[in-house]
Image (cartoon, rainbow, N blue to C red; front, side):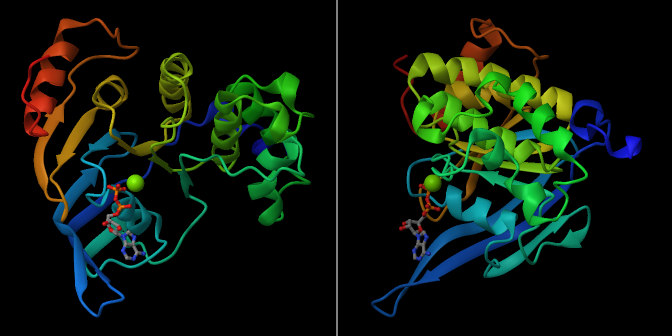
Length: 265
Ligand SMILES: Nc1ncnc2c1ncn2[C@@H]1O[C@H](COP(=O)(O)OP(=O)(O)O)[C@@H](O)[C@H]1O
Ligand SMILES: [Mg+2]
């Protein structure tokens, strides 16, 4: 089965095109009222594009990601992948959360193998687990267990577990939010490498302005709840980026202004 070997390493396929059109969302509350969380959001993620969503805590970012992942239907509007409506979760769209949620009783290798195992593909595609571990630099820790890993390593396992499925869209919900700042900076660079090599589209939620600007082609800024799009910044810099680039400082200033934070920086 040579044809199936290591699609992760060699994938030239572009990522998914995601269309979010006029999406609004409400939650029913215990009190009988409704809480509007999203207000007429439209976003077009192009194949292979990296889009970051930046917005205040509680504005509805995770909700939007859940809708794109297909975990629940939007109250209004449509969400499509390559033109087809998203109605349920699918292995072509993988979500990575802030907490890596590894199974403590499974080794690193077995955690990464989960998706292939669930789809009955593990026997024929074992080498993909090794490829994914190599991509995130954890080959030597394949036999370790989650409690033996640092926070950054655990999050790399979660990324490998996502990448082994060869996703067309990687949905990232503050994936680096709990890491210390040095690990976080290192992981941001790794994420850029992985994205450039694998070619998936990415939709990242973060409340870290620098992170959004360092990673994304486009940064979409959301208002307080219900989230509306208040601005869109195109990060017109090639990869890999240099954190000290004056253009990033300008864009940071602009992003903070749109977030309503007076630029005393
Ligand atoms: N399943 C749910 N039922 C009711 N309210 C919810 C639910 N999920 C989220 N919310 C509410 O929706 C708002 C937005 O939540 P969330 O999307 O998690 O925000 P963010 O990720 O931007 O911090 C919050 O006020 C939250 O309490
Ligand atoms: Mg959230």
